[in-house]
Length: 77
Image 1 (cartoon, rainbow, N blue to C red):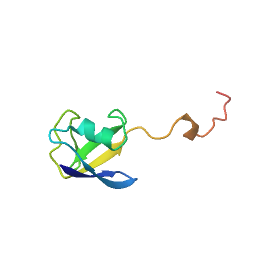
Image 2 (cartoon, rainbow, N blue to C red):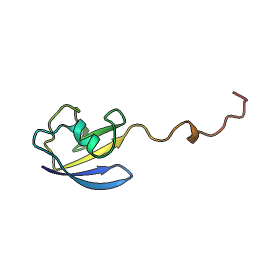
Image 3 (cartoon, one colour):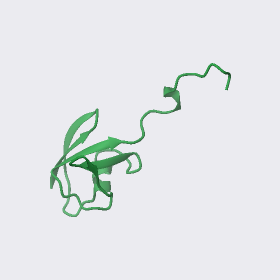
C-alpha cells in the first residue's frame, strides 16, 4: 500500500507499506517513535495499533525541541 504522509510543518513523503501495517509502523517508517508523533486521518487521531486504511495521513509531532529551546530565567533558578 502506498501512503502519502505529511508531517505537519515539515513537508510530505510517500511510503510503501506491507499489507496489514499499523499506524505505529507507519510512524516508525517516517522516522519517528510512536510516542513522539500521532497519526491523523481526516483530522482525527487514529490508534497506533489500527491497520493503515488511508491513502493520506498527517503526522503531528508531539515532542519538538528540548530544554535548550527555552529562554533563560532571570530569577536565578
